[in-house]
Length: 290
Image (tube, rainbow, N blue to C red):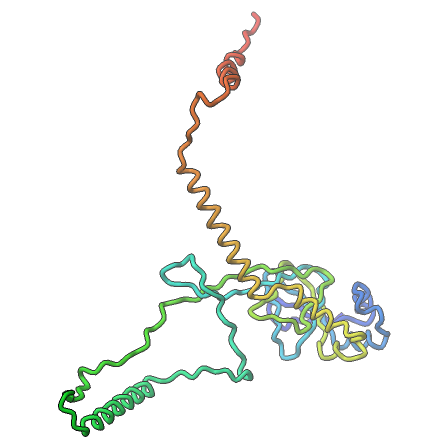
């Protein structure tokens, strides 16, 4: 077994053929692998150990599939929520995810110089219209000269001030025997080691070859992960429901403390009052014998 430490807090190990064969026996996905495939995997794969609360990188130049050998991994989801500045308890909506450059949907933002040129163009257009109307003789309608100091520009009202807050949610846990990093959706999602965790890293491009992917096993696992893990919209709906329930519970407890009790002594059954009045007399200390 060869070991090296490429990064601080991360231990990387290369398994030998016999060690990897014993490791792969723990997973049902590799029971049809031949000795040649296991030997080739021992050259490409590596075991990486992560410290507690350490982020497992999913954006490496060479994408890997992660198989959890020991420990647990937490699925941490970040929700970017738009909130009003005046009402901190009100969540407006979930911020839209940033579009990739290949989508081609880019919003053009005009610079202040371009906006000023557009306003000047509007004034020139209004001036030309006034000049055309003034050339037509009309005795009933007086002509008002254009005064740029008194001109009114109709500017769009800016939206109210809003700010984006981040909510981190614990979505689930990958335990020993789980597989992730197969290309499933990780939008604003991070994998963090809960405790000291060891993962077997196999190059995804090699794992997706036909010899290692009999019956599209890994694609079906990826579809299962995408179906099983909740999306951002579903998590946002759950967050709003939980916050509404907390507000209702706090309001109910606060109102219950302020609500006066209308119970009178006459409302208590007489048997309870007799037992309460006679109970202290029954607990008199016994006298010690001389």
